[in-house]
Image 1: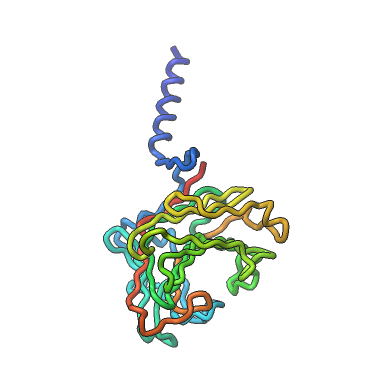
Image 2: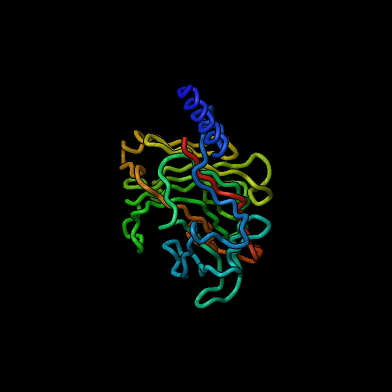
Length: 268
């Protein structure tokens, strides 16, 4: 009788945990949800996010002043909006936002996915990416700290994103990288799910569950150093101007809005 009672409790607990934690089946693998921001609160959750501030070009010749003001980052209709404005602010002609989980939420291996609709236009440069938690404040140890670009988009090419991986021996123009182009439409027309699957041996990139790029650890170690066995933090931002995107011109429309419906982190 006692054994039967224990079994009953165990089965109940198993049912509870298997149903209480949402799961996603991808490529015949089952992923359990570990962390998420659904952006369904009135304000941005400061337990998850902090803001960069400044207009020093951020190493890329960018023109914007990043702020944490509500005019540059806010919640609307259950979505985060990163808004880029053409306005004089301090020493800059544009403002935008760059948000990160550094010191608040960190990630190592698993699946990171986000449903987003992107801004567009000449000189507009949105990105969703990760940086190693050991990065210095001045980024002087980049690319040793490691960088995973889930995507970057050059606003003048609104149907194409760039996935990239930076580390010792493979950074900048020598990074592991690949473009993905939509067959129909633009990334500013509708929401898409951008994700990576990351483990000790590889990183894979997906658009709407289509795997379009993979990098193997053994391939990296042929010419560089794999630095992706540690904690990373998330970043998302829209730059205005820069080495990759070029600079705004008379065709660029403001404000530009980067919409984020949700971000989710799964483990197998």
